[in-house]
Length: 192
Image 1 (cartoon, rainbow, N blue to C red):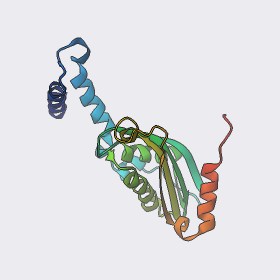
Image 2: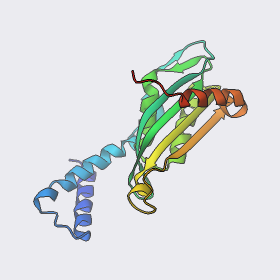
Image 3: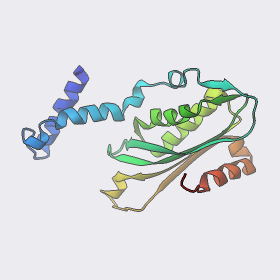
Image 4: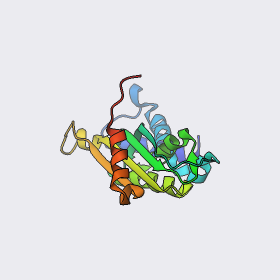
């Protein structure tokens, strides 16, 4: 166990006491250790960077056709309450001579999602990382998510969906390109 995990474990133990719990009772004895490990995993995006993540998984390809990956699962922690938000991310881009290895887009989403986040920033970080990494002509990113900070506390709205989008390059300047992207991501597919 690292020194930083030991400190997190101590803090979780103190938190349990402050909440009126007994950290020595059977169900809670290992909770500080589990919470520390979970938090390390859920915030592991701080230890990643875009260049290493992409790791030469961009390929020369002379195409200007739109590339879309939709329904990438997103799990993150809101920075205001450290409660989860989860949903789907849809990505589209128009390459300029270079394309991503397909799994790298999902890994890019995870890298930024595994940080304390707000959905607006998460959406933009993904879009700019894609645009900057391959000098894409345009990028569109949309995230649809449910936030537990709204569902289980505060206003307690169970069915609300928060939608954010970031459109760059031709996705912003060319309405038909943006419409094509929206049409593709809104098209529901039959179960495969």
